[in-house]
Length: 284
Ligand SMILES: Cc1cc2nc3c(=O)[nH]c(=O)nc-3n(C[C@H](O)[C@H](O)[C@H](O)COP(=O)(O)OP(=O)(O)OC[C@H]3O[C@@H](n4cnc5c(N)ncnc54)[C@H](O)[C@@H]3O)c2cc1C
Image (cartoon, rainbow, N blue to C red; front, side):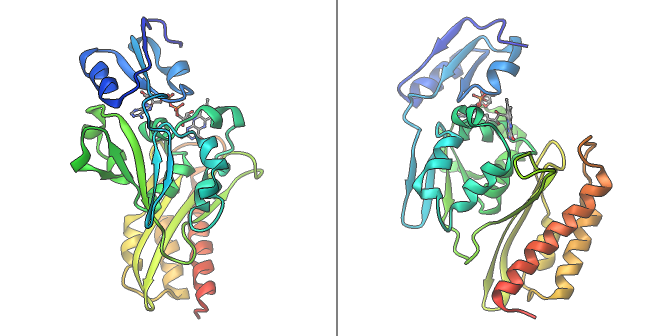
């Protein structure tokens, strides 16, 4: 396809300047690593606003949260000490599972990945599982969860610059549990699951279940979450939840794996992860 109508390129030092350029010029787009925009942007793209020097490349660990600036690359996250151990190791695990090359990961940014919101992103699935918040520049009072952002096309069409994401430090002993099924470990998953669950004494008091590689969008199994909420995690409940997942998941056509296979595997992954949690708690 290529950027056949590209005439302008800017690399502003400030986000206010980047925002002004994008607002005042039709056909101007922000660019992160360009791994998608350059090959697929097409003739719509008349100008590029490069965010690489706008001061949003940062990983900051705070007392109860982590901030990741939008120009941070996936490779920065793979090599950052902050993601090397509990409770943020799921960030590395989910990026690695996607099976992208080092070249792609060294250019791809967190902002670009969020803006695309692809259904095969294990990385985004993990972030949704911990209710990560998207920070939109110029909309400070209206930060939204990543899940709500990806499901709000009106907000996405407003074309705000994503300046970063914030993750509250996972408080359970497992952090996010991530499981996937691939032909070989280094290939992109046929299906994957990111699950985050907390207990209040013996009762489940919060849960997120996110599947990727099911279709164009990531899938959150809100019905299955509701089934778990407020209950004790036992074998019967685990079977019911995995059965429900098989019933409600509706995978799109994928030459790599049939819909029936992916439905069955959604149930298998959920059962596997919930059993792991139950066993670690010493439940029956
Ligand atoms: C071989 C290959 C494998 C890939 N595998 C995957 C994969 O497994 N999962 C996946 O999700 N993607 C994948 N991609 C797609 C893409 O490379 C990634 O999603 C990447 O993270 C996009 O980031 P980027 O910085 O390169 O985005 P860019 O190409 O720079 O931009 C992508 C889009 O996001 C917008 N954008 C960029 N930054 C911002 C910002 N800060 N605020 C608002 N909008 C912004 C751009 O205007 C553009 O519309 C793959 C691509 C290739 C070539």
